[in-house]
Length: 465
Image 1 (cartoon, helix red, strand yellow):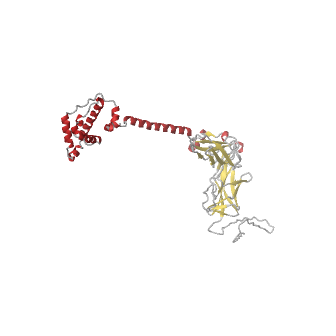
Image 2: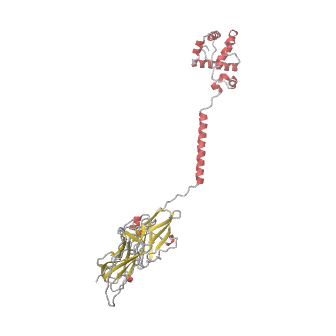
């Protein structure tokens, strides 16, 4: 007999169904299907998937060894459901069922955080046979749906500003997945078949430019995949991320002396814990790339070897200049500059002496000329005859103004009469005799004052003199 019940406008929350019989034993199976009150938004759904459903050969000695993975995809429509409580029950051959917690944090078996796909490694094999899984999902008041993205596309800091996030309310979902079969099983050392998982979320959370320190964080992995506790970490650094990834064993090792926050690379935290290491670096390098691997008791390293690469860049600052040296340099330069200017001025003065009064117009100051020693090599010019001087003077003073104006333009005659006058004065001062007897003649005394006036005021000379 089959029955179907349909409830309209069901209230959100937990529903209980009870079946009763008339004292006879019955096998009852039932299925509950939920639908969204708003058909356009869709209901919360879940599905369970094994990473590899093909026949398995569990041999820890093989280089390709890796644990099986199980996933539960939780979504509303095409949007991922976040912060749900997800776990899976695995049915094993010849052993009790095994419960695994699924996570959506981007660490361990999970590839991307907050993408709605909850993941876990399955390592608890009990031997050859078939393995099946059923996932159970439960939502709470903190469970949300990210309507701004699609399931499978994750982000670490989703929902910080509340954009696109909507509460789902409380709900429960169950999903049965496919099964896979183990055809060959070989137990590893100490019953452990797999090495520690690869660290995938190494990041730089802080750095100090002045102290040259950096803070690194990552999620701890286990001794076997992401289960248990690893034995130690191997943390190394280099100047190039590609080199760290390619030649990790040749990179510089982070020593205990470099760790300044008390963390211990030889004492890892249990799987899924947060590891925090603050490291002081050398200031002679401006760029650092870091990688880390986990190691178990039998010295097996993380599957896939080195973690993702995290890097930090510093700005190397030059030491401040010595201001005393700068001041000395400026002072010396100033003194040299002033000295060069003074030397130039002195050299200019020596090469270009200031003209004396005699070189300008010796006729103005006869007393000064008298103090100067007479030139020995200069012989006074012969005095013209008296009758010639008188005749020439008479001609000069009887010229018309037009002719006198023409004579003023003859500079060569002016220089000749000026030199003649000087030589006559010097001879008179040296010998005491009259240098110009024609001028002292009573017949021409009336023109003497006029002649002196013409000579002293730089009047135009006449070729007579």
